[in-house]
Image 1 (cartoon, one colour):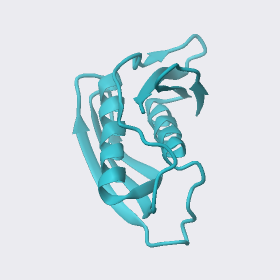
Image 2: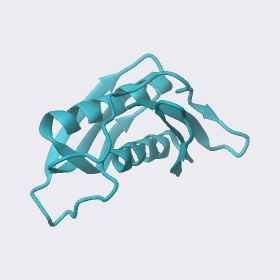
Image 3: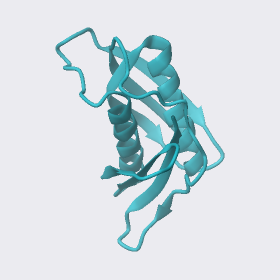
Length: 137
């Protein structure tokens, strides 16, 4: 599981992979949080807030983009950075999760949205799930 930032002229691109769909979503979540706040705040530094997310989408690719945009909405609405996610249910079209975050004063990078451009989840030759995400910054 992991993510790699890729070169892009105007936006931010990230390749994400995982051994399962859940690992892929986790890697994308962690990558986006790393972009928002490069250095994670300590869990002990502040009160931890829990937010619930429940989403249905047409397919796994749309579900990933919708999930990341919902996390992004919560981050900006509550001025929080999320340290972890607990997936309660995840399939190709539905997701239910809890995200755990702490307040922050500011973000290192502003992400306007996760786009659908290039977001096509596939299994590669080695059996890993992978996709490329483009963040509008």
